[in-house]
Figure (spheres, helix red, strand yellow):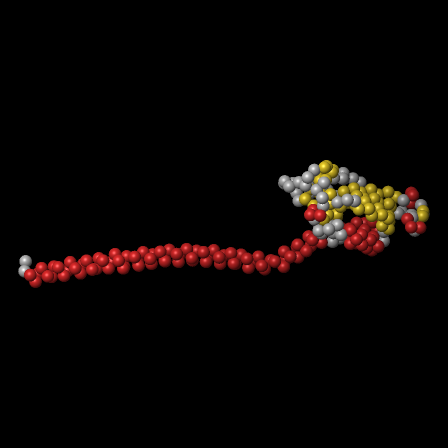
Length: 232
């Protein structure tokens, strides 16, 4: 082999060594780094897609927010966070006045915790007689079976004609406050004769005397868990 050919072979080997060194030192690490960047970019794209889906879901929920707020306000009216008895008395008095009946008495009792179950309220056409909920001494229930509320028992007595009493019961059904009637009794006053009514008022013939047991509800937060009532 001539000397020139030896230099040619040596030069080719040196070039190959430089190229190999450049591949392992410069090109291959950058290629691995680019592959890692592509993987990170794919993960970021997936995260962005998930965030975009969450944002779309939250925007859809935000559109329903006013309706949900109205529902919560309606629930807060039906089941307030306090007994709100003065407001209830005014509402029942207004219902009696607008119906032309005499609200003889209204006696609220002490609130207790009640776990709601299926309770069928009494109706005007079937006067007496679902049994009242049973009360037992126990801590506030936390298991299944219905929501726990504070129940305030009411004893209500009204007098009026049959048609006026129907109007009164319809007015009760339309009250903003949720009320459950559990017992209902109606009887004619003094056999339909004219008698002296409460407060010196005159009771007309055909007047009915109605007594009923009912409950209104409040948030259980302010009720001591001394008793628990379970509706039957």
